[in-house]
Image: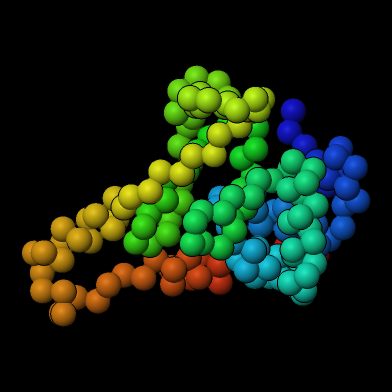
Length: 171
């Protein structure tokens, strides 16, 4: 049985405001989304929303377990709706793309510490770093073509273009 975003909020004891619903929908629409992108998408959906309202809603949704916050080293915090498992992330060093990867081995916490130092470990956060297939492909192409004559594709601009194509919610 699937629940509407409003039902999900209410089940977790959260009042279903327009701002919280817009933030939850934005996070659900795009995995590993930044707060800035959430604000932009939510603003398109409901007309206007303050940055503080976005951060407040994100904080409540994370605290209640409806979304997950990750923060790769050197990157802005990102939010995702995949919360019912202990998965990990692959992060491209060049373009910053983040993708999910299933648990390394077995059930949570997926890794066994050599010495748990008396802690009861229930989760392991693993980030795999490298280069995504697109960046590798671009590098291979650039060795074949003089890079001074070929403009580099900007994935962040492509993501911004995706956001600008989002339609406001029907009233």
